Image (cartoon, rainbow, N blue to C red; front, top):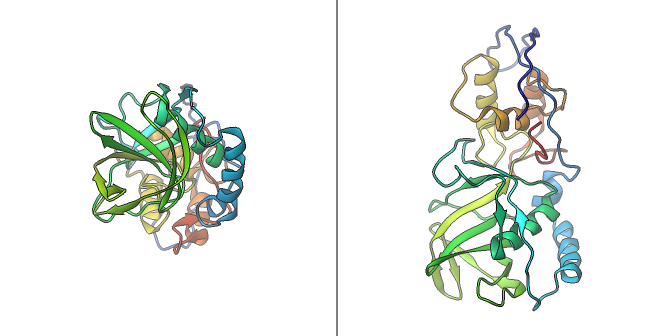
Length: 265
């Protein structure tokens, strides 16, 4: 990671619903963002339909998967590290984990993810990488819809299949009527996701406001800044806050006209 370069900038206090104080702000090399947008990938059906046709040709069903894939950079829920993510970045993935990551790379155009657990109220999203416990091993699937998935098997044949059905009940994955414990779920980091919970809502305004008012928390700084520098000018300030405030799609919990974090620096 490059050393942070410090500089001071004044932030004008706007007439918003929060109190803003003039402060020192750190400038960074602006993080990259994807060209694909959150609305396209998480709400519209056409992009996934197009992707499935592409995968059917590139990774045909009933063929073997033998590629390894780099994991990219992974952070825990809330941009915090825990035991499940301490060694999850920049490692080589194999078998079902590699296949799911490759589909995620193709679909979201990024290799930067949040790893989270599931609660009883867990709601699956298109593009989720679900890693569950299957006997003595872990198996990963990629959701092509909220109740449909693609995978390669974890047996010696590592066979690719699409169109498999699944459901979720009380935070548990159900396949063919059998319940499996979910180890973790991985999702791409959204631009505007200030609190690192994988959705865009009023909590992100609160988190960004804490930062702007020098009330820093224990978030991982690099992921936070990359997600919150919405206008890609290397500084998180009131311009970013106001865009987040005025462009949050509260129904779909996404940020309008914005995509995903494609690099931290």
